[in-house]
Image 1 (cartoon, rainbow, N blue to C red):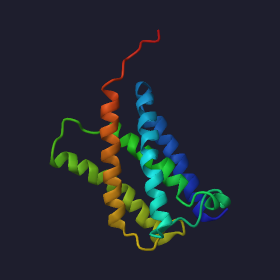
Image 2 (tube, rainbow, N blue to C red):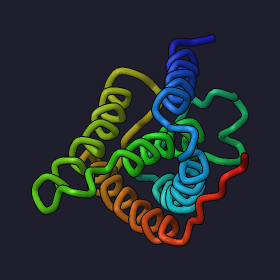
Image 3 (cartoon, rainbow, N blue to C red):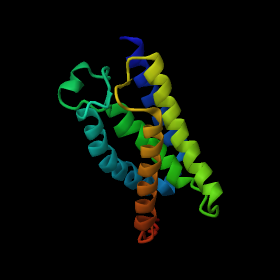
Image 4 (cartoon, rainbow, N blue to C red):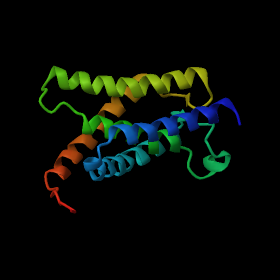
Length: 163
């Protein structure tokens, strides 16, 4: 197995560990909502970017994955939703304006930095017409939409005592 596949496996394992450590037991249902809704956003957006030839993911965890889905399954369908879970569950709701903006920039910057390093050092991501700042902006927009949906959805949640 080559270095790129080891990186993908490491990121997946690290993501699972983050979920186990950072998602409280009473927030698992909310975490699933965040996880699944973000995939609704990233799947079509990723497909558009790949099909337009702006970005490419030449190496996948499973070699034949690019025959069916040329987006990055590991990053768009797993890592980014995990980042969104942590983002929304720990969002500082008491902060407004600049503090909120810094939180967005930190999370989107983390994801953008990770992708930019992978693009320059590995064959996992290849930018064609894509630029790092497009990742920053689209990640911030996706996190914003996802968090708004999560807050709307969680207003209607009813706590049930299963004892």
